[in-house]
Length: 477
Image 1 (cartoon, helix red, strand yellow):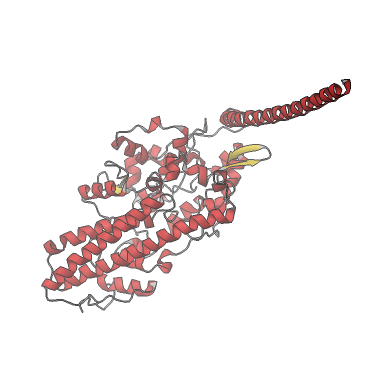
Image 2 (cartoon, one colour):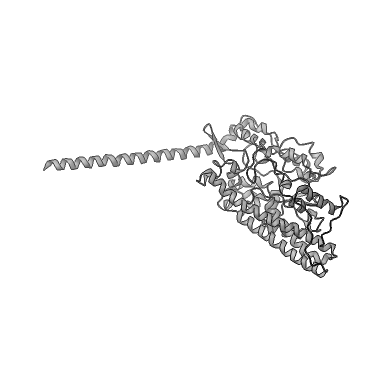
């Protein structure tokens, strides 16, 4: 009888050894995970303490990125990658694609304004100064100095020495003699502590206009706000002269901003075909992003466009600001555990829908401009056309709010589709009003739409309405 007891005891001992091994393994895993967490915490602490370890002091308004690069070589080397200008995603990248060649309708929509002459996709930050000084949109001999605001690290120094109002009021062509450095380090960082800071007064003033204190922003919020110094909707106030202003006093939605512009009676240009007073949207990336799911989840611009990178055991922020689709592993895939091709396909499927809605809104807008032109030709009065023109003004701003933003609507797909739908509806409503006016003038057929299928043809069409070619186009049937 003793043998079975011995076997049972042996079996219990074996089981105890097996369980003990599992517990030991779990303990080892827990220790490893805690160790990794500790390393991550220490890396963050090291990152925050690095400014006290710098080798070369940096002056308050140091514009030369290479000087900063002596202390932060990894960040600087990654920044230099913004020189690359041949990257091309389906709807973005750093390649200077020609929007007017790809979409001649925009030549008609921007008739009477510089964007009908040249409209290129922006290259990387490294090229910002070169591109603004060479654009065909510049006016000679005078162009607002305000146009230089977001293009150079020399700007904060000039604002400090000249005064902000004097800087804005200066002639662009005079200011460009004083600048030689593109966008860079000191636009966003304090040279002593390396903390993020706001160097452009317009953003601070916009927060004040909304009754907010930008100094209360968290570090994570600042990782978007430094981008919001430039990637926003803005206009130049006439008093003080050409004073850079964000139209946020009523809020940061498209409706808030066009209501603000209406109240200010502001327009960038008058459309030569319809005489509609147009507000040209700039690039309201921050405002659009703020309505999207990624902002709701607490992400910042930097999380996707400047993700963390590890090199030689050191973790740092990648300053190669670019489309996340060109760096999926470090941007999208950090949260979305899908295969890279599937992630890109998902993004592009959303962008395809926004692009299609954009084209539909454009088609209606272009025809609305021509319809009003036909009504003017038929003898419609200013009073008769007022309501239709106001609808077109709002419709074009809503379309351009999405069209001018980077990312082809991906920063906030639902808001993008909503605004494009609103734009389409307003354009069609305007066309309906004009058709009734035409009917009252005895015109029962549809207006005659000229051929604007290519950029050159569209350019010739708008030149006929501005009197710059010796021909006229009749829009009446």
